[in-house]
Amino acid sequence: MKQFLFLVAKTFFFLVLTAGCLDMIYTQIYLSSSNRGKVEAVFNGKPTQYDVVILGTSRANNHFVPELFEKKGLKTFNYGMSGSHLFETAMLLELMLERNYKIKTILLEADLSLSNEKRDEGTTARYLPYIHHSSVIANHFKTEKEFSLWYYIPFYRYLKYDSQIGFREMFESFIGKPTNHLNHKGYYPLPSKKGANMKNDYRRLNPLKNKYYEQIKQICKANNIQLITVTTPVCENVKGMDYFDKVTKLHPEIHNLENLVQGDNYFSSCGHLNDKGAHLFTQKVLLLFFKDK
Image (cartoon, rainbow, N blue to C red):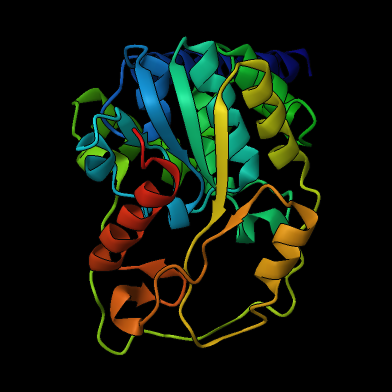
């Protein structure tokens, strides 16, 4: 019996030691990677001073063209991320400030994301390698059910989110293989698609007094950052378009731009502009908010 218990204890110790070593190796690789994604670029990149930082979901990532801002002399980067919610957007803004980025203006896309306060599993995973190296990330995750597992169990987070931060991503980070996430200053252009779904239904959505949006507003106020919050275009064949009226009624400071670009030829899908539409939309946004820059 003693031999059996000794074997169990020895095996357990070996597993913990192995997990700890793997955790350390993976984490060190992610701490030196800056050309794979936007979270890595912020955490490991050189602190930068921006005139405009674009934040939001894929509807920011695919809709705002930084090169057009740059032509007006505005140093700009699009940090919008596909799949992210306001939970992750607030964390990214805090992380940028923690890493000593200087920002004059935040251009925030907040429309459909106002309808929930959930986190996105895939986007969440991108922050987890840095949970022990950033008080912002640790504090942001502290109320999550799995926080103790992420923080205290070695290698757990890498196993749980293998498709996002597991072996393949770690190896490609190690060899320095770049992605397209940082191309075009963070903007991801979408093509026109024949037969794309040009209808949607927002009737079940209701905007909230979203705590993460309120957090973003407080952060900007505390750091003397101008915050411009907008909704972005959707195709014409949408049921429940009054959702956007509800947004501006609940949040009067949000600029409703959902109809600023019209015509299905400007859309890749009902909720996302194609490259042509994004250029037109960005030009109109510049005229609205940055005319005198």
